Amino acid sequence: MKLSKEVKVGIVTTIAIAFFIYGFNFLKGKDFFSSQRKFYAVYNDIDGLVEANPLLINGFRVGMVGKIQLMNDTTGRILVSLIVDDEVNIPKNSIAKVVSSDLLGSKAVQLILGSGTNYAESGDTLVAAQEDNLKAAVNKTIAPLQKKAEGLISSIDSVMVVVQQVFNESARQNLSKSFENIKDAIASLETTSYRLDTLVSNEKSKISNILSKINHLAATLDNNSDKLANVIQNFSNISDSLAQSNLKQAINNADVALSQASSIMTKINKGEGSLGLLVNNDSLYRKLDKSSEDLDKLLKDLRINPERYVHISVFGRKDRNKPKE
Image (tube, rainbow, N blue to C red; front, side):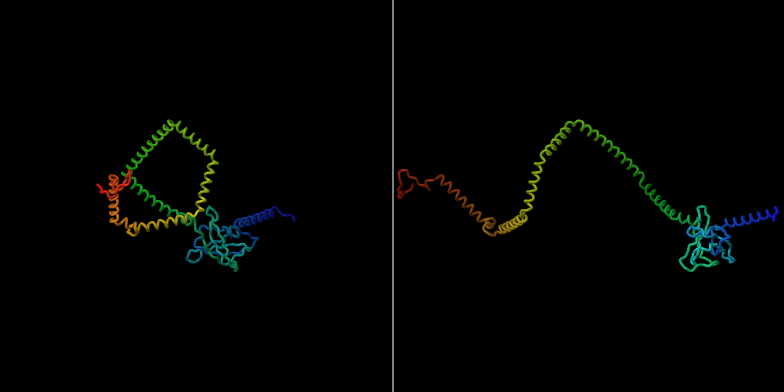
């Protein structure tokens, strides 16, 4: 059967309209060839959420936002329908949260799946939630910075007050004097450096001679390193001998001897014993002094008149009965 041109045009137009309707709905997220379920959420503020915005689970699109309408009561709440694909199981304690999907402020609904095993049926109402809008987020971010800035400004004000108090007329004069003193010190250092340079230049030969002697001394020490090692070894042996000797016993004996000597001196000071009497009793001293004086007189008389004590005869013994002159 041959079709007329009008029939062909009608068929093509019908097919084009059908494809247009399907494509338009497909772009809006509606798919006539897949089964979908509808859930609801009630919000106080949707913050720019519109129909056909994506419905996401962990960033993966599982549906779209359906019809949005005000509720019939006087609360001003908004009823949002959520169209979800059939293959997605949503627990009843899941949360439908309005979030920003990009930096331009586009909105989406993020499904935060619950932990229960009791799944929601089509037509159920999910728990609604909403993230902070841009203004609230900015306020939360800026508030701590604002508080820190206010504290910083207050600290700067305090520092400026202290600086103003420090840099008064007297402080400025002191600073000026300090800088002058620093300038004089630098000039003095320059003069000292010049004098050192002059001294080094004038005494260059002596310094060279001293360095030469030091080098000679170092060479001598190097040449006599064996002898020095022997001397060090001898000192080490002496140290070992001292360490092995009973030095502690000798020190203890010396301590005992000093203690005994101290005891003897104490007794002498108290007048105990012969030596104590001699030291403390002046009568014995006087007797000894008198005896010494008498002995001195006797020796003088013996020297002057020896014949009184010694009789020497050349021709024989004198008659003892002869009276003396």
